[in-house]
Length: 63
Image (tube, rainbow, N blue to C red; front, side, top):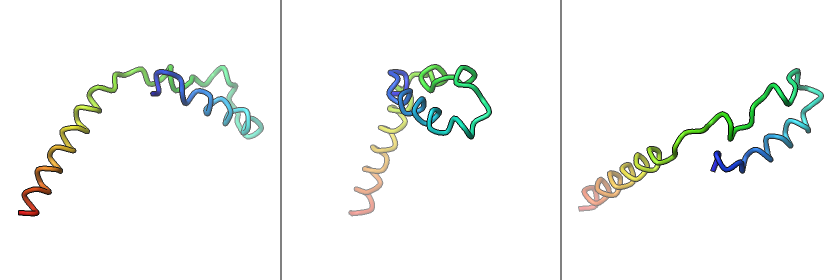
C-alpha cells in the first residue's frame, strides 16, 4: 500500500497544515512511497506463519 502512494496525500496535507511549525521545506522531505520501497511478501509470510502457529496453539489448548 505504501508503494502505491496512498499515504502520500495524507503526508502532503499534514505538511501543509503544520507548515508554520516546520523548519524543513517540502522539497527536503521525501514521500513515504519513495522512502519505503521494500517488498511486502516477507511480512505476509511471517504474518501467515504466526496465524497458523496461533491456530495450532489454540487447538492444542482447547483439547
